[in-house]
Length: 315
Image (tube, rainbow, N blue to C red; front, side, top):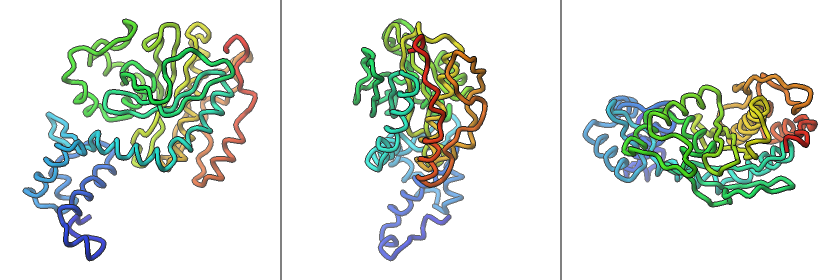
């Protein structure tokens, strides 16, 4: 790729703008932070020009300099810009019907959220027939490290930028006395969440309530939004929570497919054993809804087992 080559006659007149956009596109396509040398080599940008551009982009928040390895990745401003576009282009429109069906099947309160630096912002809330007294209304911001919605999005990012974001914090805020106390605790939690593919918080946001969430990804496998469910803590034991996580992951994967990220068929839902008195879900198999067209996603949604509502004890 040559960042000095424009796509039209006008672009030749503003080489700095062309190179800036090329850097952002390049970083967006990377699975992990990259060195300035790799950027300059792959984009054919002179070293002096590259560092001037990277310094400006970092100052404006569009690029993050991960230290000490000296690597770069997209910054918060780029994420905010992408999140704004996704909201305008249909993130809520695509996610709401999937979340509504998930809530109808499980009887839990559903949320769709995005990450904004160290906070999670709730864009959509879907309530069951009997709404729960929760603080997570649309537009509410909460510390990402305390919420399942925030932690699943943090876990879906690479570890270095997450550590850089939280490195200046000697202690993490708490609402109920529970949750990660510092970066070491948060790192351990995110490693666990990343390994299993979903996050759980219990009583960290509101006493007596627990939440499970999984990340949906956009292009380049970047975390775009969280799909989460909240329920009274005492109503679901550990096996039931694992089954609920399966449902959450499946819905997040369907949203991923609709956002044209990596196919939902490439991710396997957590493997659990469904007992006869629990939800009748298909477990341990790739999530459906991986067709590339909207018709395929809608067909996959319609094919979901409708017998999967929890019994009254789990509501």
